[in-house]
Image (tube, rainbow, N blue to C red; front, side):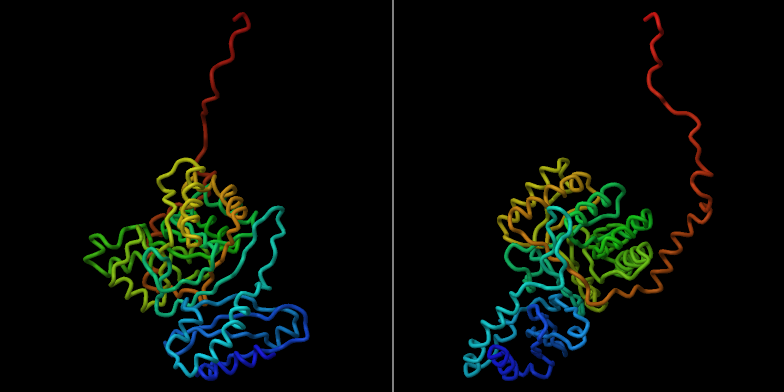
Length: 382
């Protein structure tokens, strides 16, 4: 309780007590719940809120998701305090560090034989359009040593996306899938599999155009349509709201479109490193690329592609090697879902109407009437 008092006193000194940072000691068994919360009014300073609600105690359930809304840690939040306040912070910091390092208690252990399982669930508040991934955005360093986030671009794709989903599910792992809107209209059943598997679903534009090039670089409305139609199409294919998570094709981030993402409260994802699997034909090449870059970086948001067969074939062994190497998978989820815009919903619907004559089932339209069966059997006297 002394550490709790120190924490409360320190947060009061910092002027953060008004945000309702509380410690509730419970007689129930289990470690305290740790939750990172974004401070209101745009100051974006994270404090640590250690909480177990009375309702959770009564129900016997605990919220253990670590919510990272701005990606800044407690050290940044206290960076501007006065020297007089430093002693109190120094006393409180070890207790805060122990609390933040406490094991999550709401992430279920993996019930699959040999499965890897998740380490943490991190909730992202995308207000203001924050960017993630050190290739382009340096501010939010929320991953701990040997933590990885798995992300996949360019799906959904037959055979390959389902194969990756199986490998992830067999290891109790979750990932982010940045789908191309047009692909989602082609394979909505696979998009629904992504959702049913508990993955986070974001968008990667309508048709994977490089928005830093013409005609999109000259026409922001055309670029906005690529972005918004992607969200509308993936949402429509999924049948449920999707995350306000977006990845620019070719990782090209035009400043005016980053400003637009800020207006729309959509989080922009680069990567900590690109596996470059789109150039690889063999699964062992994919595995070597990821593991070599991880050994160099120590952690990171990993960019891969679920339309690539080599990546799909690599996934079971890659996850095995990640586990053997002591790496832990973090799952990113949104604080709230994206709201699609009716104008672009209608544009996607109009594209679907181009196929309005295709209402009959496939087996009533197409029939195989001849098929090659190989060389004829040899005659009896041959």
